Length: 395
Image (cartoon, rainbow, N blue to C red; front, top):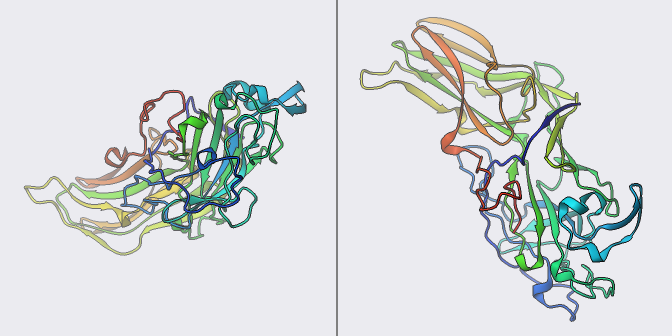
């Protein structure tokens, strides 16, 4: 396994969220009022629209949740004896190794037009869980061991999309203790460089985490971080000659999966030896870029197709092996085709959007990779006003 340690969570795109209650109620025990229910608002994603990325979670979209609170009483590392309700107020760092996702395990949450719904029993109705309160558990059942519940600290991990992209490898069931280990897998299945790859099949994979929140924090509000790297392409003609670009593609043996391990003090990304191969066609019809006039510095294509590729970025070879940008063009009356590898100085990071600029200058061209500062996913360490949650929060 090739690993990459991140000193903090990958803080990529800060997503603002609006909070609204679920649309209807079901299965409410009269012993608890609505304020005791664990509710989700409708996420609003502040993603720029000049790409294939989602700019909002729409009605029918689904995300998944793991939820932790009460640890086990532990007599040894391998033997979990009993729920230690008196330790529900311990912080995540102290109890994560001995806590199971007893609040939520692989919980499906469905976005609606006016709120989110979920069924704690796995059916189709809206049947939410409850915050712990003295004498009652999260199913609103009487439990005299639950004491000091106002001080309980909860931790949640969420992912999008709910199905088809992420797999929870640890914990393997709701009663298993331990912080999550999750694997994201790319959907492409090409086996050689001649395989045509569909970039629109790649989901905009995201994760979110909130550590040590309390019932008093209210409805869960999510800020998601992107798992993949965005890569757009732009052709600029800075020469004194007209330019015709016939095609642009990216080919190689690409990372197939990435595993995200939240068990340690920092998030660890690791990459298996699995690869998919082929080429992503970015431009397949002639693009004419005339020579700039005296009043212009360049003529440009803008981001080709107004879209970015979503790729797994890792260590060493970045996106995989033999990854090249291929361009077929006519310049100065001569037709050429070139394949250019990633520049050695370009080290992409998860969750950052980059533009690969193919700049024609004089009688040659240069490939440069630039961070999309105007469309950057990154929000900074303390964008939400806190420095203790890796910038990905529920609220």
